[in-house]
Image 1 (cartoon, rainbow, N blue to C red):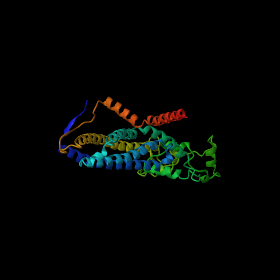
Image 2: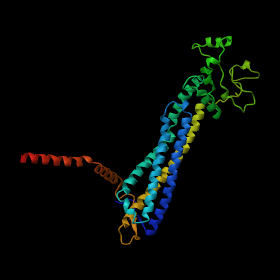
Image 3: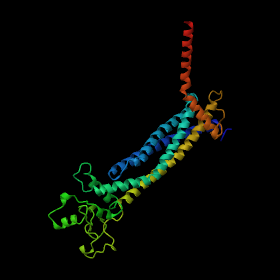
Image 4: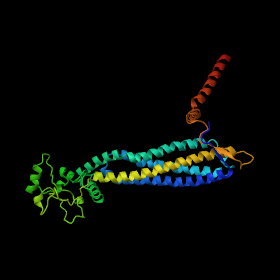
Length: 351
């Protein structure tokens, strides 16, 4: 049972080939765009890899890069097919390649759909990665003279200033870690010694935050030390007053930034997926309609195109059987073996 049969005149075939050629060229450029978006996202994730805990989140940009490259290759081949369908002398070279090409291209669209959906559903992994990565980044903030951690302070300060945030969840995260290195502490100072003795772990903990947490929009000079001590500052009430440091945690800010970027990319790839399905549908009609007139006395005669020659399930089964037959090398190998055994037995009988 032929599904979605359409009759094409010579004029309609030519118009379809020309239109599909333009769409394929446009799809090549969307493939370039997808590839570029994957590279851009990967670079953005690499820039802040010090505050991210694992590499699972790189699955999204890696998939986008691969999808972009495949899209360029497939649609460039589609351009070539459309150009050859305009000249019946060139189209026979596609014989035997059209169907595998279209099947491969159809399977590729599922990869494109996967890349689009992956962009939406990576929020959970990204959140977990940032939660641990930022926690470690704040913990190692003071280790500016430790190999492998000497740039943590600069990274955290840049993030807090760029994204207008403070700490992992909020500014109080800085109260729980010693973020000032011992080499900048005067251990002869009684206040410093008392601070260290008052902590079970022997750490120098203060209710203060780094300078990068300060909000420059505040009219009051930044209060970054003794934040919870009302008596340390004139006309100050930290419970009720809007503090002049950033109140939003960096995990929330970074998560919002990356998920917004991924949502935009996912929507773009989803639109490319819809367009790619339309291009493949047109190429199927064009290839069937053009094959029907190859070898005809009148190449400008009418022809018919269709999506499926049989029902969907029958088509899938026939395709699977065709693939099995194409790649069944075992039968080819057993025949020479059987022939060799017969020859050996014949030689023994002659002797």
